[in-house]
Image (spheres, rainbow, N blue to C red):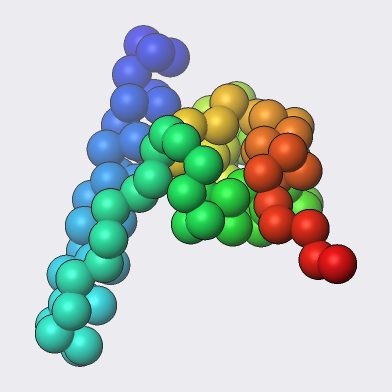
Length: 95
């Protein structure tokens, strides 16, 4: 039964994400773009850099993934370290 926990939590994450996108469209009349889950688009690099510096656990007290962990997974990163490595490799260096 423990295997159903993260799936339910992930479904709730997706439901909340859809609600947030609908609210944004209602307020602004514009749609949000999809997640860049692969490649080196600037949006994905920016996400990786932001989340690489975030503090917080990847699992909650019950051993289920946190919202941070689910967001990283949705964007194609398995861990904070993976996001940090991707960020360092692909961010634009200021001269």
